[in-house]
Length: 462
Ligand SMILES: C[S@@+](CC[C@H](N)C(=O)[O-])C[C@H]1O[C@@H](n2cnc3c(N)ncnc32)[C@H](O)[C@@H]1O
Image (cartoon, rainbow, N blue to C red; front, side, top):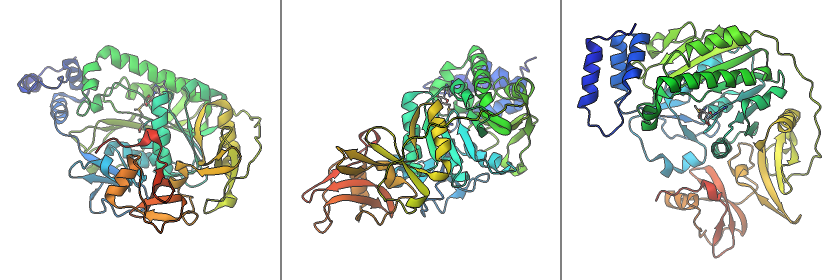
């Protein structure tokens, strides 16, 4: 029974009083929340969805910078920071150097799920990963030598995911573009599968008008069904005893609690409790954790940690070994890597200890990137350093001459404009840096320096 109360009537007034520039929050959504969390909370939730979103960032602990060091900490994530206002992030070169990521604070709670693992996972699949907020966090949490497969089925979004992970700089990442069922052939391969599933986006009502416009109970039901299909399709790829991190940015129980129940009962898993501080304002339920914007400084979010109890078996994969190739010795620890040819001309470096896993994944699903894209060979003569190398944590910055850029020059570089370097800078490939953070390469011809920043990554903002 819906609880149509005075609070609900007040909400309707609130909606009609608003300057109607934005689509209003759907009545049925308010009724649904009234049923789920009571009228008082539904009222406070709806009010909070009309307020401005909090601003937060997460620092890349492997690319140290003093930026935002004074900002308030996000209590559930060691590298999260709240900002008082939203700066022009695009015009900060350190964003493009991978020193930080702009991320909604609730998503950073993933760190608490990670802390609940009783052993360190070695193979993690982030199944619905674009644009890469949680993948960059996974990568920061995982130790070196553990493999992260970050996947996104949609091409354009997968390209953005690859870009954001290249900026983050860790070598032990494979970016794939595949649908969940394609991973089933990697039977029992992964220790962890994270499913940050596409959802009805109620938690985004504050930021995203389309989420308001597209919302309906029918859409909620459609999303819930698609989520169950995603989970069922990828299920064989999770090893027995492996972990599922299930999350959505929506509030309703169809896509949250009922799907967690489906995973437990139909697929075979148990919910694992997380430790939370009551002061955080997170709502703890038997099936997972809710972030409500009227209670936490965040958007709406739901997350559950589960452990697989059903058997999956493992399939011993026959790895088709590819010939190793020499790669230019431009890394700090070249001996830890092997060179592989990604396509005819591109040479990548992959950590030796995970090379077989990387090959196994590449045999089953389409890979957009794996390891560090090092160099392009041109007609077997010239070796051109690739942009991801300049952003990689393993890049040996002593190899190429380095030039520090001012803010204006750095922005000009990121817009892919031609630069003019000081006369004493050697000719050839030069690494350009901003505040000690590598931004990329230029080819210095003397009178001008050709900009090697990837065309599709360039910033357009003046
Ligand atoms: C909520 S977003 C992921 C956000 C991301 N995890 C992050 O933190 O930046 C869900 C993603 O799932 C993708 N997706 C859509 N259909 C999918 C499917 N059938 N299987 C897996 N992912 C899908 C969407 O394109 C979208 O990029």
